Length: 204
Image (cartoon, rainbow, N blue to C red; front, top):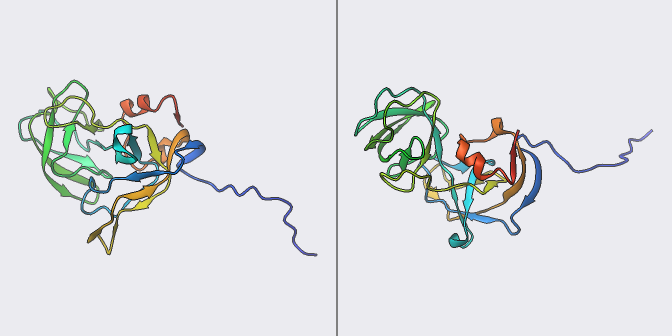
């Protein structure tokens, strides 16, 4: 007796996207000059900012989580952020909207966390362990640089030959409506990010 396949629906399990209702027709082009020099790929589920002014180019929304509490923030504070993250020297970090921000002077990457030294003050006082930092528009700015309105649909390679060759801006799919498993997202997400995506993305 031979095996008979009566029907198939073509569906596969996706740990990030529990449901995809809509994506951007034709896809988007991700700018590849904003990542760390050791980054070889950006995993699906990364938050993206798509704007009319970008003419199809999109930016990665960068966040980080404090690995340890910072008791007092001074003009040149050393602190640690958990991996993964995509911050690099020159990016501005902010603790919360309304506070100031400081640009990154040095980053020492580790297997679990990264040590960062900033030039300036990013909080009025102490910063709690586990708090999420976001990328500010510029040094001393108090607002987020990019707010998400799409999510990367597929993992994309941005470097080859190890990390020696940076690929040009990469074409990718971008989801704008659906449900995601927050625990499977590749980077940390802020409350402001969720608010920005409230009308289109459900976080499960």
